[in-house]
Image 1 (spheres, rainbow, N blue to C red):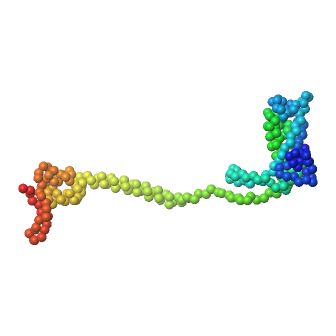
Image 2 (image 1 turned 120 degrees about the vertical axis):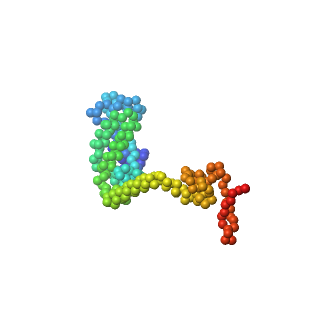
Image 3 (image 1 turned 90 degrees about the vertical axis):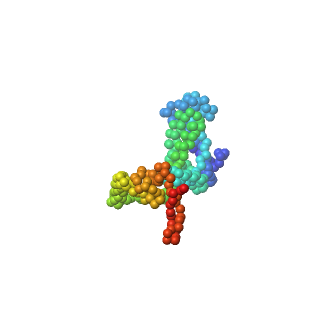
Length: 259
């Protein structure tokens, strides 16, 4: 592997020159022959060259961008994910750890062998890129220190409508007693309206009192309705009602038969 300072690949002096973000690297790998030949569909890809004797060599030129990530996680689910390019210092930590330690080269060789089963050159490159990202982050993880979260919140479920059993039982029992009382009163009301109670109650109405005062004998007879208390109901001519002078010199209601 070789690292470069720019996309042209003309300067590989990454020791005295500053590494920018993104940084660039090239890798040439001989795929493990124990996995057999590469996927046969790769032989038709113009970016893949297959040797006559089956040796498979992979050469890639890549750029790697280092990001700072800020995210929010609620109950294990990521709800916010923001990425911003890292500064040069962080970029040098990621790039330098991988370049000088070479601890992940074995992983990259194995990843290249597995990528040989890809169907296209782009798929092969994508698998190798993922492998490099995992190796670079893994190698640099020992160079960073854990920090507390910017904001942390713990939520607990709690019952806020808890009611003691004794008051709840009294409330339910009192409501049931009200239902029983209403039923009893309804039964008594139906019993009370039986017989002559309904007729006595009807005679206390204003039309019945008018019939009692100004009606004839019909008003004193039994009736099934208030209208039956009036003589007119039976076809008779009722009296005229009006204000007349009384014997005492004042005025009062009086009745007379029409001519």
